[in-house]
Amino acid sequence: MRRALDLAAQAGAADDVPVGAVVVDAGGRMLAQARNEREATADPTAHAEILALRRAAASVGSWNLEGTTLVVTLEPCLMCAGAALQARVSRVVFGAWDDKAGAGGSVYDVLRDRRLPHRVEVVGGVSERAAADMLGAFFASRR
Image 1 (cartoon, rainbow, N blue to C red):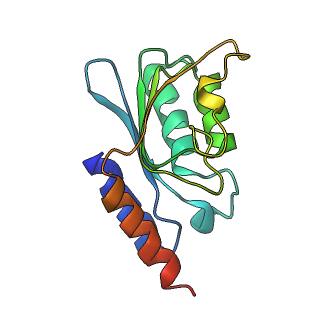
Image 2 (cartoon, helix red, strand yellow):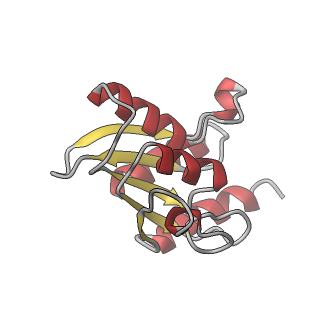
């Protein structure tokens, strides 16, 4: 989570929503890392999670990321939760809860939906205060 928070700070410094993500394998080795790049790339799908999942798949040479953990500073949105499911990620660990668009248990619980063929272990609230404070400061500066 520490690395994801560093990446989130970089995103905020680049005038993007401060979200960072890393993908680690079952042994804890980092496969990929990313930060939000929507503003830099004018790409609405350039969320930290999507970019990290793409890079992790490229790193292992497969779309199937079973056994990996996606660590992200903010609870994934619907798009990112769907991508984690499609990649067969085994666990999602996140910092701040997103009570407006979260899909890891707050607004929606897509990651653990029993109607879907794959479910993900979810661990929320890891370094929650640090992640929430960074997001709060970012949005406060824009009001």
